[in-house]
Amino acid sequence: MTRRHFLHFATSAVICLAAFSVANAQSYPSRPVTVVVPSGAGSPSDVIARIVVERMRNALGQVVVIENVPGAAGAIGIGRVARAKPDGYTVAFGSFNTHVVHGAVLNLPYDVINDFEPIALVTSNPQLISAKKATPPDDLTGLVAWLKKNPDKASLGQTGPGSPAHIAGILFQKQTGTRFQFANYRSAGQAMQDMIAGHIDLMLIAPNIALEHMRARSIKVYAVTAKSRLAIAPEIPTANEAGLPGFYATFWQAFWVPKGTPQDVIARLNAAVVDASADALVRQRLAELGNEVFAPEQQTPQALRAFQKAEIERWWPILKDAGIKVE
Image (tube, rainbow, N blue to C red; front, side):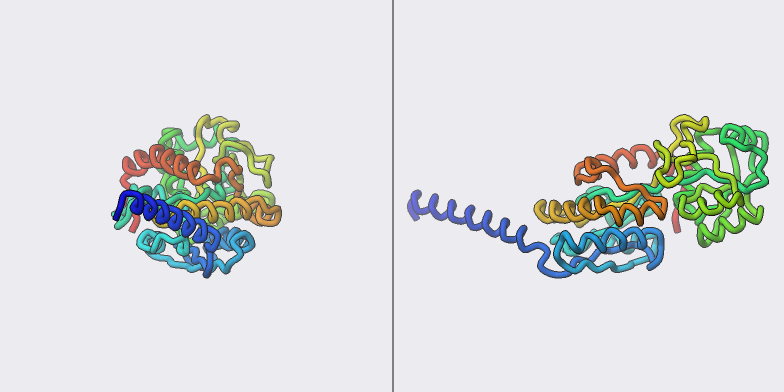
């Protein structure tokens, strides 16, 4: 083969590969996309995923199926995505727990950063610092002072080691110098009923569970653990405003795909998530659950990667120091 023929052949090959890439981008998705939710049907993550995915179908022009894969605190479902073919047809609906906490407290067969490509952040879920109605203090600074005077006497209801309430509770103790017991429950709803009945003292609880009881004056709510007030309950101050500077513990959800997924496919999925997040009905339904949608500039793959790394740097030392082990 002459040099001229070789160059002609090489140029033709590059053109063909480029044309194939463009055609691939234009044809994706050509069949149903599976979104793996690593928890059971009806779980908080499952409900959020279904609201968003329902709208994503429009942007993708294809069926998007949710597959619930619970087990091992979510590690089974996320592990399945890590092992899946990187073609954009298997997507993980992960969270703070699956992509931050698990890396610190579980022995995983995958790497929470290096085995995934980020798609987009979706929602954030702050907690409400709440207490039974009979708790003496009426504000957050008073609550902290009361807990300091009564070490190990109060109890905080949560759904087990590594749960959002457990992690936020550890941070609260660390930042305030207080000590209290952790009471395990099968669900946050059960813990709330026990707090209303006066059997436990405290909860760090999602707004959609706490707000109706707060408004019925069945419990006390001192602050929200976010950096800004909730749109659905602007009367509740942030912890920073209420006298606990710098205390925030916001839990979140996001989409990932397996490492090696083509960038054009990632871009298509990202556009579908951003489109769904901008829909007024989607935002309303998420707000009713106490979730807030991330701003568009925070919904790029690069923003998710940076956000996840920052969360790992913040939380891993706290989690490891606490010796949390999730069964």
